[in-house]
Length: 400
Ligand code: 4IA
Image (cartoon, rainbow, N blue to C red; front, side, top):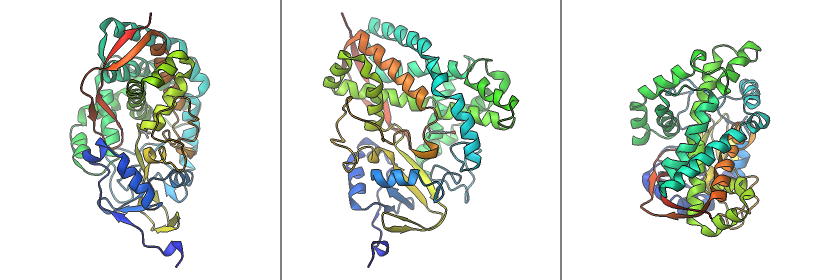
């Protein structure tokens, strides 16, 4: 009997339940250890939790497509909850053209120009936090900082920005199965969807900013007029809640592991890697799906055509087959190769902007704050895709 003939192991666990979200790590380990791929009967999906296979799938868009959705919904069988994304939910060659445009809009050179502005905002925020002493690291830093730089950078008007995080919450819940999180989020999404649809129109975007940049590609003939609002929608869907949870992950790590905070204080130049390591360690985007385009073999196991494959980015980022001491948050670690931003042709297009936000906020804190102490009850926020906290009460002490 060859490995291809082996019976695929199956489990009936639910990786979209609050029990699982409270502590996914023992289940991640089980999934990694049982086999390279495990059938999850509850949702009829093929789970992949080892680094190698997650990486392989991410690099094989021919066998594992995105155009049938990056969530559990198979667009070939069911109507998506909103018109598909032109970039996330697309395959080459359509994806390639759009992605090239998008990458230029968020290029390292463009992002670099924002550093000074972002730094001033981070410094003001930090001084305000220090004046208060007791703050919520999620609301007052992880949300407040991206909210004070990103909508501005896109070119959104001030009014209505309170819809941005709720809208993203719907987007990330909607990738999951039809559980209560998803159904309730979609049921309540109408006002958030209406806001986003409206802000994606050219006349509602400032003449500076990423939004206007997207519309300028219509002028140059790179994209069609009708594609522009959907690309602005991608910015608003993917660009805020991700950095909120990335920064939240970093703050949660630095508050829990004071030795790493000390290392960062000693050299704020480590801020960029401290942020990157938090992305590996917490994996704010926990999971993603692909759909098989034909019968495929994963680690010696056959998976049929048209099946949903669920990649556990968070499990891959802590796979001991790949990482030394995977469960330690170590800001000196070589983080390259982590899949927290994905990998391959769909790897995060906004990664340079995300890293800038993370680096600037963390280095500013490291320069001005002596100690971060957890001072109250930590509450988790539940979402089908995003891992992060609802509340992290901390006290901050000024560096002398
Ligand atoms: C889009 C994976 C996540 C960061 C993401 C979410 C939405 C979109 C893209 C990426 O709407 O295009």
